[in-house]
Length: 289
Image (cartoon, rainbow, N blue to C red):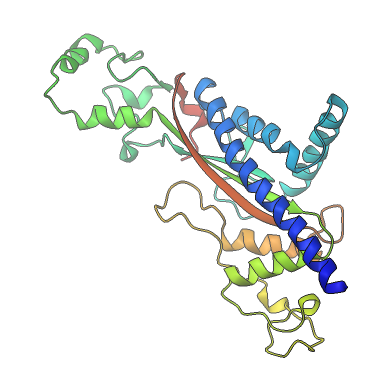
């Protein structure tokens, strides 16, 4: 009977994780949609993602339930933001890049090397015109530059870089909290050990990193702390999806070493990427990189 109960609860929790994963994909779309019409505002994209993900946090069936779930997220997010994540950058233009939900603007990027603000007088621009480089809204040399666009056979690598810069690319990372008792701990431990390339032994409820049979009673997995490798973007774009330091924070939260209003809480990182062409001018102040 205990084993059957475990399997039933496990199926419920895994189904909820799958729902959260699909909602994360949808939230990535909502964030990108908000970004292209709000000048790449990380704040607007973050709010759009939060609203899309609220059904994974609680009830949203009516206005009162929606408000309650929103407050729940705000409270949990405030607890998570000051944790020692070791983030390379904590905020952009006042919007936090730590906490429960993070929006990383992979593109556009700043700096001459990234080829974004590389037009004549581009270093001083505060925005990129989404209509294309031929408009040059802030350039005093418009007339001389626009003529080259009538040469359909000509190639302008700099202008191509400008066009690419008006494509908004974002990555959404969501720390999804598993809340089904017992199985949340088992799933988190299995995921963490897999990320650390460490095999677990012992019983389901007493997993350990010390090799032993299923009758083992130690349940000691403390050696996993600090061994999580994290998640990496194979193309090395933007912020790291999940660093080893952030893995350690998730471990400490799961063991109660870093309490979040409760003794232990179990989070899985879910992520989604989305790209859309800008429909408003991207503002320099929202550059993450």
